[in-house]
Length: 74
Ligand SMILES: [Zn+2]
Image (cartoon, rainbow, N blue to C red; front, side, top):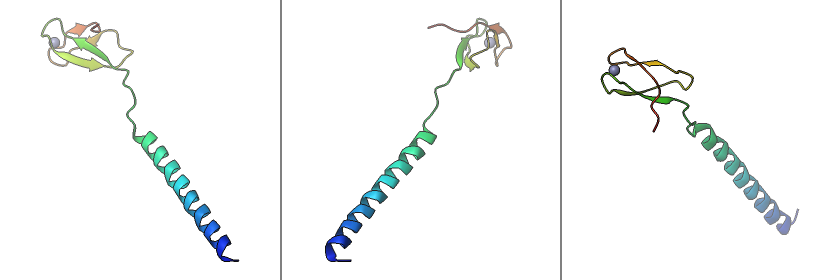
């Protein structure tokens, strides 16, 4: 193996390491990105408390006073 082959191998190995690190950190970043919430916002008619509940709930119970409320539309 001559000098030029050694240089070529070093460059190929460095580029391979860079590609590996780039792929590793992109996968890592994707795993920690926040997922969009499907929760709905509710505003209590009785005590004006603002709170959220699951997206599939049509009538949600107020955690402050216990009254049932429809989802709040902006
Ligand atoms: Zn309430």
